[in-house]
Length: 436
Image (cartoon, rainbow, N blue to C red):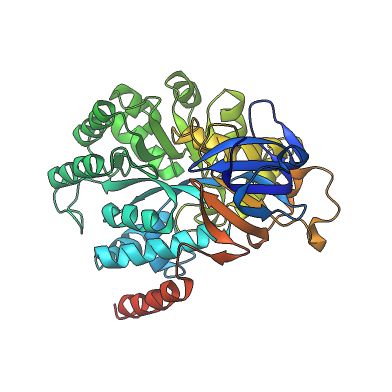
């Protein structure tokens, strides 16, 4: 093999490929933005590499994929806790968001990117305001991201009337088309904040441009009850009748599903973003994730935003997802570690339509990977890597992160982001928010 740019060696390689291959004492070779080979470390001893990364016996695995968040809500972390969803939204979050501008969203997103990179996330899906600034921040941080401007019937504090929102969304699609890191999505907020016309137009734009469509669906029982009373059907069935359900659709939450909803999700190949900690904190309920997986629905994991979680730690989310569904079903075999790890990696990538380029470590895929330090008391001994990932690994056990072939964190030091500058800027922004 000719010389490579980066060689990650001396680690256990958890590929998350279709065969579930695990390579003991393995190595991953990276040239440009791609994985060009992987295998036993002994096979790579003579390979020239511009940079060698010693995993020191750690775990080398695909970067985590956060399928649902509102990155710039780092600005509001802890602002309005312990409240019902609608009170939280209408009385606190929407008024606070009215003060946002592109500069605040940019710096809030950089803070989110710093937190996500430090916790092993290499790709995220975002729905928020001023999403052009989100895209710019993610690009500056070197993160892979699917981003889309939130659309709803009332005037946005960013773009104003909905027609301007559609124009802005299409301009984002045009601006970022072909970018190696940024994918633009069309993102109506929810069936309860979007008219039928808005939802159908959003779906049409998604279809024409071949980009993802992202929407909150059936997050609470009250939302579903209102849909049944006003529309005579559940939100999922309503979206099906409107022609919105498709393989491009990522339905976020899907907590309060009704009879027939899972069949519709499967029939239309809709993907689902599961956000257990946010759903627990807001007392929204427990999504029927085991049932969806058993039916063949693709389910990824998400953190939701920092104002309703209050972190961007997907390792914590994995642990919660596994245990929540076990106790809910009174069945310790439900949501086994392999299933949950897949949800946070290749399943999340599939949910975002990116599984052909990321989510697993395979020759020819983009080089999105992390190294987890296993030389820790809470990770010793290790019998099964995936069990440790779900039940024992902490976010700060991640030592190195590579995205698209670029090192963005080395030995716990951020490379692509000035951490101190980001923290200082957020302190300034928080003072503006506190003024009310």
